[in-house]
Amino acid sequence: MTPSDSDLVHSYKTGDSTAFDQLYIRHLKGVYAFIFYRVMDKMTAEDITSQTFIKALEHIGSYDSDKGAFSTWLYRIARNTLLDHFRTTRPTKNIDDVWDLAADENPFLDASASLDARQVRDVLNQLPKDKRDLVIMRLWDGLSYKEIADLTSKSEASCKMMFSRTVADLRTQMGPSAFALLIICAHEWAR
Image 1 (cartoon, rainbow, N blue to C red):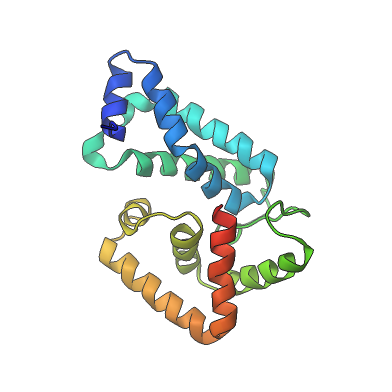
Image 2 (cartoon, rainbow, N blue to C red):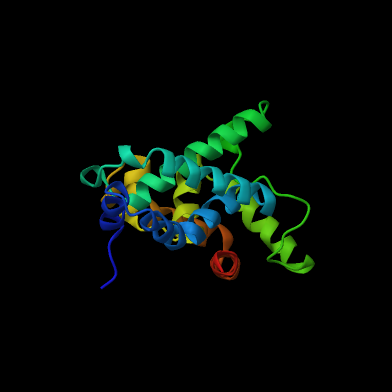
């Protein structure tokens, strides 16, 4: 039987140093994707991901499974590390508007698809921040509604409702084929 995240944290706290290795392996891909989709630069995403896991290791003693899932706690660290990164590297930008600082190259899409990706980003960029973040966390990051609710301090029901309404609005605004492109891009980038 595979141990839960809480079991691994408890094992680490009681002296099993390999337990954190398992947590790292289990969550690395998701945390990296969460960060990459916001910075769109491989090296920067790798650095911030490393910083996130170092902070998690340093503060694992403060994790309390009664207050939420380990993954939520870890994504909160990743989000705060991203905010720190944006504050120090781009002090003139409003952090609420910086969700996809794209580099000149995109390792996942070829040149023709990059144009489509920019169109998708433009549509998402027109959304209010809370709706944009919700779509990104749900489609790109693959987070559950519960994880999103924990991260945003909203109820799971309100996250579901907001996502449903936002998707309906996007479908209407973009048309069925462009909306399908948004979904395809989300799945391509999630690989």
